Structures are given as structure tokens and as C-alpha cells.
Amino acid sequence: MDNMLMFSLPEADLQKTMRSKTPPRKTVSTCDKEWKQFHRSCYYFTPSKSTWEVARSLCKEKGGDLAIIKSEKEQKFLASHIKNFFYWIGLTDIKEEGKWLWVDGTALDTSVTFWKNGEPNNQGNEDCGILYPDGQWNDMICSDSTIYAICEKALK
Image (spheres, rainbow, N blue to C red):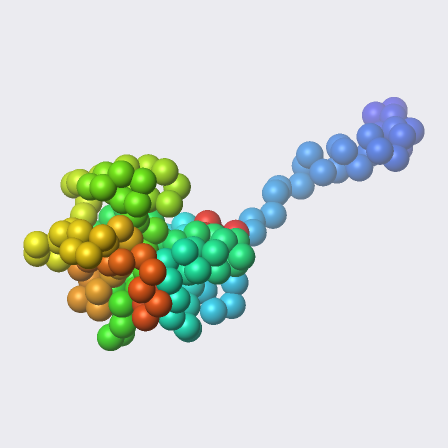
């Protein structure tokens, strides 16, 4: 009798019953081509140099923003991929001198900073953060167009 009831269920109810007994599929998260994965983020190292604003626009066009560095492990990962060049990161004090903010609006956690000795020094109105090849940070004039950038977006 129970079997007869099961077959007499409307098609939609039968499919719902079958789905509820099927374990969910596990999906593998991956980064887009040309992006590198670290933990739950994907990173893109731009192949061309630009100003901080142009770099940020490029990152947004690619579905992310300039990189936000939250840990020493992340810092080391990024530094290991930049070779001998400088890269923009998503750090700026353009709104208020000395108040460093990430591009998502969060304040810089002073317990997780990698400033080069003597930096930031605001020499010549430097309001945007860069990552040196040795993994240290420096403040730089945002309109400098000789710097690459690191974009970051969440892992899909």
C-alpha cells in the first residue's frame, strides 16, 4: 500500500522526495585563470603599471578590489609572487592624513602591519600603500604610474 501511495504522488512531490534523499554535491572552489589562490581569496598580479586609482578601477572591472592584507601568512604569500617590482595594495590615508584605511573601509589593524622602517612618512604627499619585493610596505604618491597592482576577490 505504501508503494502505491509513493507512485500516486504528483510528479513535483516525487522529485522533491527523491532530492531530499540525495546527498548534496560538493563543489570545488577555484580561481579564474591567471589568478592565484591563497586560502579563501584569489589574487591577480597586474601585468602593467598604473596609478593607484587606475589600478583600483582595473581590479573592480575584474570583480575584486586592491588587495587587503590581514595576516603575516598572506603577506608572505603575496611577497613571494611579486619578484622585483612594487605593487599597489588596497591601503590609503587619502581621506585623513595618518588614518590608514583599507579599500573596504576598515581601519588598518596596527598589530598586522609591515611598514618599512621609517614608513609611512608622507614624503611628498604619499597617501597610497605599496608592497615592496621584500614584503614591506611604503606609502607612495597615488598618481605614480610606475607601479603594478595586486587585485583580490573572494574564492568562487
